[in-house]
Length: 199
Image 1 (cartoon, helix red, strand yellow):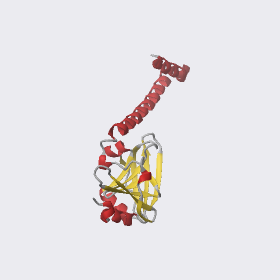
Image 2 (tube, helix red, strand yellow):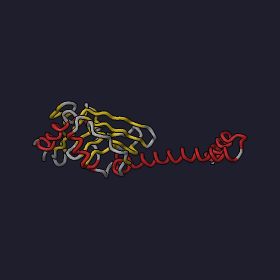
Image 3 (cartoon, helix red, strand yellow):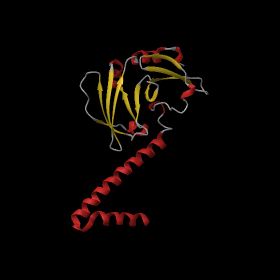
Image 4 (cartoon, one colour):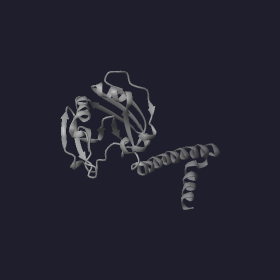
């Protein structure tokens, strides 16, 4: 009840003496703000409830990075290796500029926007090729809060010297990424073929 009274006070102050049209505009504006906040809350809830179910579709957690030694590097990229304590299965992850927000595995590349507003839409440009059109984030991208470069885009990624990304966040911000891909194909080849990364 207190919350409704607060909203009522806000509306009364914001509307002023100009009548119904001003009041309607204010209500519409506030409703849009509320809807935006609801979508952010829903996004954060999805992150918390789906993190345990995304498995191989999600980038590695950075919580235990200190125990993952570097086993190979090329250009701006390094391969970190971890071993599952239950199965002894090794996992290799490629990292850009020692920043775990940028992760490479054998099938995809991830740009994490967790803590930066979540991903709503993205536009990619590989090398000097024309930029792609803006596309909405996939359900998985929304769940893991990361841009996922996979499929034919991943093939372009591995062959390109540079990746630029324009990311529209759930909060309405814009994030621009410009990555030097020198060494990424060597790192990917190591991860795909080295006995250190294979079970």
